[in-house]
Length: 80
Image (cartoon, rainbow, N blue to C red):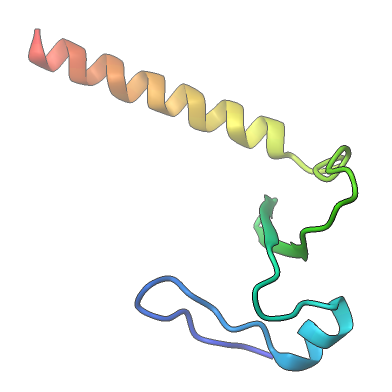
């Protein structure tokens, strides 16, 4: 099943999937990147501990942080 991303970056979660996961209007959801996939789940009162376990989220965050630092260093060199 495919859907299009709207102009504001919004995507509709198909009703059968919402029903299966118990997602209702007004519920909060959690998004995270797992490799090349974007995942979503219903936020609940349960602990978030271990949510990203087994993913490469730490490596991705470290790579993004390095990229941001390098970008700032280039900007600083350019501005002198």
